[in-house]
Length: 279
Ligand SMILES: C[S@@+](CC[C@H](N)C(=O)[O-])C[C@H]1O[C@@H](n2cnc3c(N)ncnc32)[C@H](O)[C@@H]1O
Image (tube, rainbow, N blue to C red; front, side, top):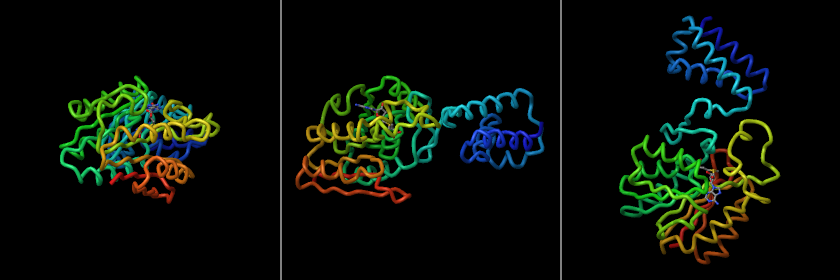
């Protein structure tokens, strides 16, 4: 079978299963099997696929039809221009989280050798990106899931930051050994009742998504712990879900009177990041 035919048949199967962006997904899965760039794939559309390659492609398509996220099938996801290992032990990194990182980097430039803490680190994208973008920094990365931390450890090794990213297992900030300049957190913020039962998101760890009755249980807990774990001129950046900005802002105002609080929208115009600045 030619690459062009395999691509078309993969796309058709994904469409039958109502997978969004079926054409793009088929292309990404085929490129992964063949280890080819987009340009190479389209240049070689009339080449023949070996039986082994065809079988591997069909396997990937079948898994995608079973609602397994593409990132889990590929075993990786790009974030902030770098490749991270991911599997079903961690949330699939979302592009919105790049805004959290971008803003944290801006704040961190106020300090020489900043000390940072990333809470609920998952596969480590935020902590590792901060360590790489801020070469003088030291980063604590916490998660309550030992499974997630095992993936984060692999990513630390992959990006050669194991010495500067300290992985800690425990509840939010309780395991942090000292106050820090900047706290970042993309904690679970989906309302229990909104947790999807089908689709690729349902394959992600519940622990990474479930924010309790109103979606804000973990975030509230973190805000209450942050007073003791932020240095006097520190910043905290929280990723939030749609419609949560007002509740989080009000809570922070009640806990940190006099602090500056900003809300940043993502590219879709949804309020996505709440920034607390103590001084
Ligand atoms: C939404 S995921 C975010 C993962 C990663 N930071 C990212 O942006 O892709 C939330 C993470 O918080 C972790 N988590 C949930 N409850 C926690 C808690 N009480 N303390 C620490 N981490 C927690 C989950 O295990 C999960 O890895």
